[in-house]
Image (cartoon, rainbow, N blue to C red; front, side):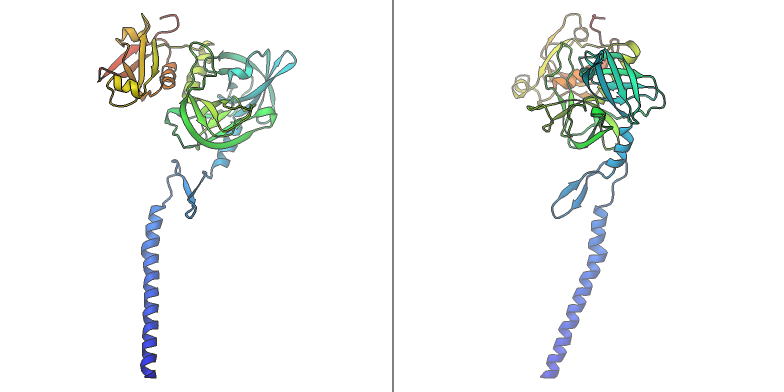
Length: 365
């Protein structure tokens, strides 16, 4: 009986050991390979969030914020403005060219008779205004220097809601400030710019932007400029989670105009427009709640000559979707008088494409 019990005990121990060995082997050669295949790193030039804790499901920021900050802070400057000898305030600016062109906000330099720029290396230089555009809250400055480090432009059309963004400024001669957040929305209109032709199509982020950071850079996780920080929405005057930046594609067009012509060459389509909502979509028998409604057409305008009619719904400009009034305004604002565009629109439930629409300027030509 004792011998039988001993044999039975050894048999159970052997079975347990075999089961453990088999389980370990399967885990090492099947399960771990499956996990490793699933978590294979993304290519270095593409953004993918990194899961840092599988238990809490917490997502981490990209690890290259340090490299981005080091590269971009050298392109961001402090801007101080004076009325004679009296200081009026200041903000930040972004270096566009190695020979001293700098972009900032119009509201930063408004009313100034003297402007001083402090570079990231603490050199102080006098700046002159090449041109300004209150309608987009942008101004172009020039300092006499060479060898500056310009920022690299990104494509603000490619910006996605939820992607990482860094706000980099140079307020109060503090050398630099860097904050991080995500893109919260695109094509925001917050009604802060005045004027008939004001263009508000802001990129909204939750990266902290405070007074003094206006005119600074909003960059993506590759260090490319996607916007110029311009405004915050706040009841107390300080950052409360809503920051707004002028899209880089619009910035590029405006500063090119200011540099080449001294003022913005503004093209007009010649339409009075409104948002498309559920009721408009139902009344016009639209397949989706999208596009921008044409309420009226200006006589003699580019739109009238192209055959655009009240009640049409504009869907795209040059293949880029326009699902809101700010988006359509921004797209048209990127062109100069004499440029040709293509419109895609819906009329009476049928979609049309009109090519080679020549845009006119403020003077109607």
